Image (cartoon, helix red, strand yellow):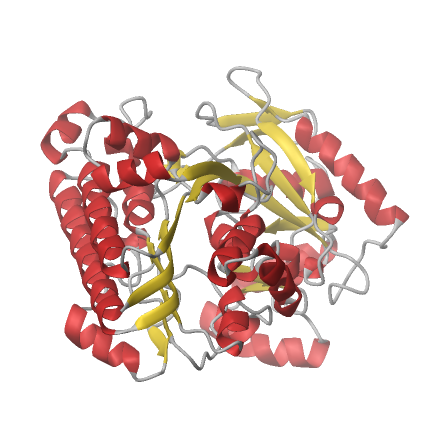
Length: 498
């Protein structure tokens, strides 16, 4: 009983946090891993957040290959967002599907934002104790999740920590206790599964540092702008008990996997103080598109009068009829603009162009027209400054068409606005946008760094150039090589992932 390959993910713990706990003697299991395995940094694909970081490992391709760039994605037909469900919307296969097709036994426990397709020779548990679970807990086989919840419990955070701000010592105590209960429950499940079966690959991901780090980073980082010494004294550092509990779970699972198991551990993406201007991006793009002092068109004035005089209940009832009769999209205001923001993670704003032939009511010509507009917009974005210090607030603007060439690239935003995050920004300005106040980000005080870490056998990492960072999709190759025990066999499996 046990596993040939064990992959453990620690979502939301940075290398600096792990190293600090190792140095303090609070993470003996991770200290042992760090001493006997090689280590390499895993840098996220530019512009994307923590979700696609894990999706790219599960599929072996970047977001232009799997199409999962955010939990809420833009629909070019309606100009609205929809909740992205990997079971309904993702066609890219997971790497373990190729292993399953070979007859290998695999167990996948709470891998974030991964393809959720049937497997025949193992188990897959999804959205059980994950970060901000987007849909009900589910599994293959389908009946398994009911037994898991009955025996090990359900998620106390459901539907996610985004509804649980940490503002008092009692808030922090509840969040930490719930996190440790989740960690213990998942560890018990993993140990039981490892002791009762033989697995070619056993993978489990812990996300509690991610959950609590978003809302409680102001209690962990003494240099955080929101650090409250009195509250921190009363509440304690919420990250410490979570790291200790995760380390204990790691040891239990490794022991249950057996002495001959090949262990791979991936940590990331950790947290840092949240700094973002995403809350102002709609105003920024509106002013850059329409002009700072542009007057409303007559049709806009008519719509404003309609909204002012007709009650919301009647307008809501009439909207489907109006869209049917007039052929209007659900969000007609965006349909008339050349570009606009789409929902995205805090560290990078995301902008979509209204392209002819791609968006339902496209106004921007593809090709030269698209390129000219992109160059102009990038120049305008790079001119934005902190109104209080005069420092730039945009570090870089990433053109997705230049970086990502996969078949699902049309789903991605056209530009990522990479904000500078070395200091808080409250007001921004440029000649074209004037002065804009940045609204506070509610609940969250922590946001992700963009580099994680991978520990694996030295020979697995020898394929990569010394000293360089790898990408998430490179991790897939390491896992496949460990399950096949040869790079030649792993390379043969890569095409099966599409």
